[in-house]
Image (cartoon, rainbow, N blue to C red; front, side, top):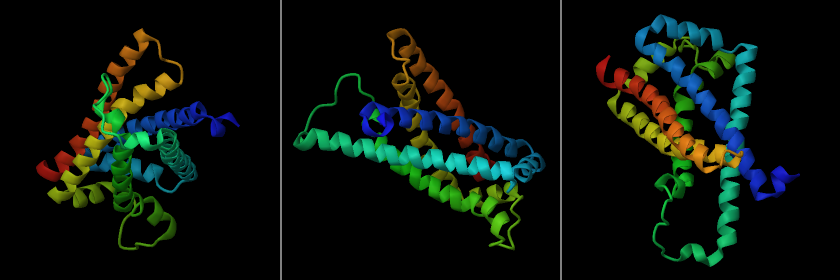
Length: 220
């Protein structure tokens, strides 16, 4: 199957899963910003999603997309390094026109993955997973507002999340337009446009997440 056996096929999988995760981040950011304006409204959203069948199906789809994206990232990196052989140990100048994010996508991805594990423990484990299993009887799985306020009240945690959002910003500003290029939007006119759109769209997403961390960490 060409998606597994060819380099372009692997890049297509990376692109599709990456764009899918960007859509999820858009929804997640929009949901989180609600917490700044109304704790009650935010908790209503948390209860609506909760452990309902559609939320569980959505969680599994998102998890599958994230796992595929991460696995293919490591797979492509391994293949590229093996193809380069000893050349990768040579000290070379930064190529003209190559973004910093492009050269450090794997490192950024690892930082994002580590932040994701922390985020899953802080919130998903205490909310949806807790609602399913009852593993934390003293924690209300529908009180997302209370969990956000409690966790981000520690400025160190808020700063850690802000660092995470910066890593996501660098990763997405390159990954967004690069995915579209892989899928065929690679002519000179539209590629430059997509680079601009990617930067603006990614900045809006990350500023939304950052606003929540700043509000609960330093203002509320």
